[in-house]
Image 1 (cartoon, rainbow over the protein chains, first blue to last red):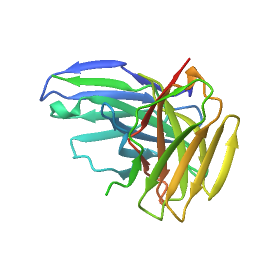
Image 2: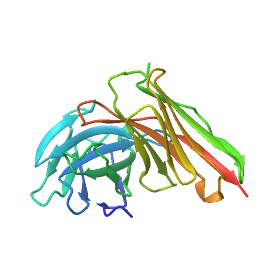
Image 3: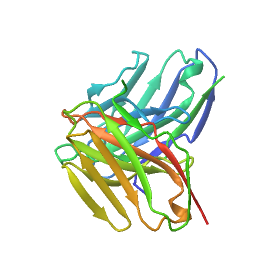
Image 4: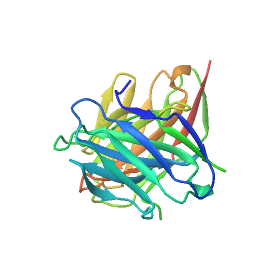
Length: 114
Length: 111
């Protein structure tokens, strides 16, 4: 086990709704990254947060947003859900400044959009 | 061309076989190379990482990087049924912010 936890485990929403996913980082880690993994695909980078600031973003629209809190836990918010948002959402924590930036993944939240 | 491509699989081998999993990448600026294993309905777990060309061994696993060919491999010796999982190669860009993952190869080791 990596020590990274995510909630909820599963979630079902309907198109147009909003969702918030949560992640608790591994103790001592100050960086969190979020990924979207569609069925049968590798994870796709959404964004990364370091010390409560967005520190990089992949090719995802602005309706995907995030927060990192002082205790380094994090949230991923998705507005105006679309059917294609159905996927496993993974968060990964790491310690910036340590090379390489080895990321430890949580078990993921499986989101289904109907 | 995708940034990272991986042998499509799925791959089925008998127990005890040597398994070779491969990825190619397009951006020569990539510096760090990782292999993750992902069991069904779980998050990826780090197996190995390397940042230089050559081989790195850890138990039954050997990671090989050829930067001149932009080619990375993972070898599994004496494969076990517990090795059955999806294997993802991941490459870290030079800004240290973005892991680029391959699509994964699903491996089944048959007893």
